[in-house]
Image (cartoon, rainbow, N blue to C red; front, side):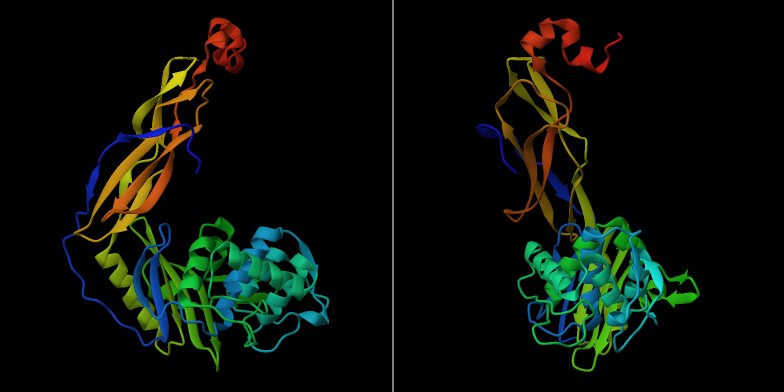
Length: 367
């Protein structure tokens, strides 16, 4: 975020102390690689060989769904062709079937249809190669340094791999999309004559589970990405090559929710200070946090919160204008930040003197 003009610290210190007192012993898994993160902040709660590049099987389809949602339209019609037929898990599409992209996404994410993955790619991009290029572009944009995709369905292929950490980053990003979250949290759906039941057992076994995706090939082993929400906090768990993945995910999620809680250091809309407005009327405006400043903490951790803004800004100022930021620090390291915005206008003095031509007159011309 760019900061207008010279900056100073407006607020020195706000301490936030977690009220948790319980301590939970560390857990372990049967996975070759694993990671547990908090979705909003990305804080790593548990990791095990999290950056090792491995085959990932059908959890690939998380990326397929993200690309489809960002580059397609849910109501896009598609007619299935012979090019959509694929080995392995299937939605049982047939050439000539007519579906909407949204229906294909249910087949992709609930029953892990390899045919649905190809149909999604063809629906959105016309051919598989162009769609896979979008998948890799998205991976680069999200900073997935240990990932590369060769197909949209996750069948084993040269140059198709990811890491537990990269897949957690991807899932955390995907869950911010309302349509993605709705689809992967669906237990079952009927599409035409097809009844699709979600393969993700954690939706019924794990408290607060909201998705995300299962996977398996002989070479990759069992792969799983899950997410659960409790008490306003969402955790994302990934295991690769894990023969005991259901139990491992439940244990990791329970550990995360027991050992951490999401602390709100500053509530969105809270007025923190004010800034002078050069040539403005009024001569200063209040500043507030644009949204909640949150971070997961253990029972013994504290956040230090510092707000920074310029000494002054030039008129005019409009409500919602970004003027500074609020940062949270843990052990001296910045871990989260949100913008600080003006919550009232300040017009240029010439406009103010003109009466109805000022901001009030423009907003309420008949008064």
